[in-house]
Image 1 (spheres, rainbow, N blue to C red):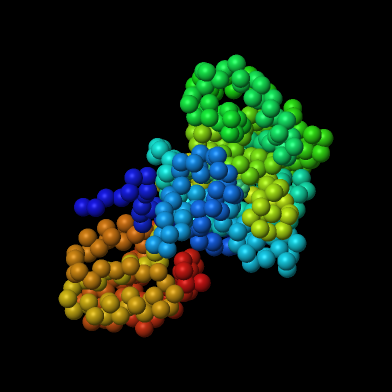
Image 2 (cartoon, helix red, strand yellow):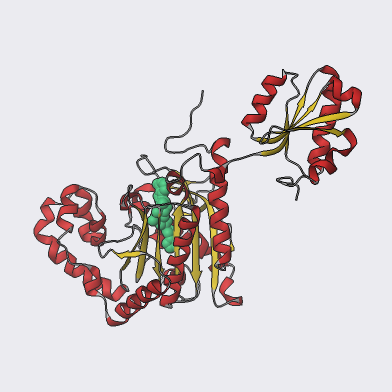
Length: 423
Ligand code: HAM
């Protein structure tokens, strides 16, 4: 047997109701916030991610699935959606028609990380981006949208962590301060962080190696290095969050794993999984669209990991329960043809219907009806054929009714609880 690629996963039919629920809730919430869907491809030129996410990020340095295609071009499976969305916005001049654009995408991302609980090499994100606006209200609104998605899905024990990583100027000064603080500890940092000290010292704050994390605890915080306009912007974001009653916590040590952020950065963190396995994250980027060839306007966005969101939800949540309007129990050889016709007549009338044509006993078929949570079982056997009537059993009340074969659609349509899918 050829097995699944390590770190990838199948989503099996029994998991789909939960997945569909999450996806549809995210979709509906974002549509309500004024976002429209966009579907960029899952593969782009490697250069896009190197330029967009940053050459010296873990994602670009060691986690991308990069290959040379037969034409000799370097392509990569997308490790995130933002760069591709912004490429599409620039390429199709989407901001020429509207000065503000709100788009979202749902789909798989690929990162060759070490697989563990909640960490996969293929995972799904719902990603939302607002382009063409740098008001702090927009920051608060996008944090509110992320919060609305997770709360409407019913995920509990989640906190919004918020920080400002300043603009390029603030970061320049902060980087120098950080290097100055870290210099005496340079020999104690892990190999990666010794390298990061020179290339991207902010990433050291995110290192999971215990000694690096311990040293970082006393490091200066970026919010102390913000210039007046970044400070004011951040204050505006917090006031707007309070206006909307969004529960949040300031986290001055949060640096995101992607280099494009400026000013507001945030993460949706699970109490149990912690920040290393955040449910979502995002932030503002003032320069990214311009750098990718689009207009020089600011943007902000976030992505929520669907697997991590799904992990926090119980499998037996009644909202994921699947049921069908009717199970047609076909009893005996002679009823097969009429039963087959009945199943398909009901489906054409808009009902969801299950049946088995294998001629098993009533008991076995009642088990199937239970398994698919049929609301009604419609029995058709020799007696029914002779009388041209059907026996309809309500699986909740256990009451049975006899209905003329020609009247079954009308009968089902007139029932008080009505069909699940036929309305
Ligand atoms: P990110 O923080 O790298 O941000 O990823 C967002 C979310 O994707 C994470 O919080 C997590 O739920 C999920 N995720 C990331 N890696 C994995 C993995 N290996 N396995 C399972 N889930 C994972 C971004 O991707 C940015 N593009 C977000 C953004 C949009 N910023 C601005 N706009």
